[in-house]
Image (cartoon, rainbow, N blue to C red):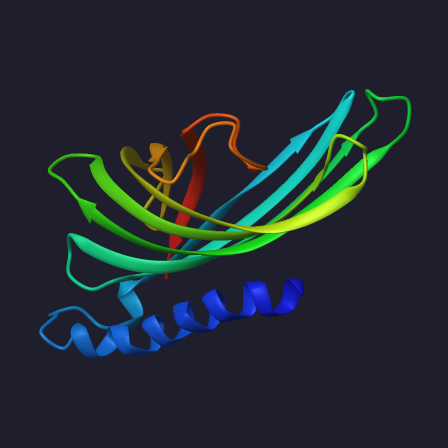
Length: 181
């Protein structure tokens, strides 16, 4: 079940990336210079331990506009209830980003997660969760080919407490590093 839930969005993202270079034929710089990669790693320890790995790849269609794909893996272990409750989430993202003047950008993203959770009887369950995220951020150079980014996104699909959700708030804040090649 996890494979088909993650495979479809990942294949759609791959098709988008394969088609994207055709859009960049008017570009002056080489296609190699237009690719960038990055991601984030998160760690937390205590009553709730978590590990997050989220790599991404992007392609600059123009100097201001880029598209890309990302993968996500999240592991959680919660021992607040007298026993270890561990879950894993896997997913993929499609994103578009537009660079504004200065270090600012706007960002839109579709995310699909195969989300694992415990219900009220502490039985493990899994559901597919789609999210549409929009917002903006800032990107600061860390050298000639790397940059640090921070962004705040609003989950337009957030439905509060109507069902299991990987998010406890409609706001999603991310930090990471991007590397251009």
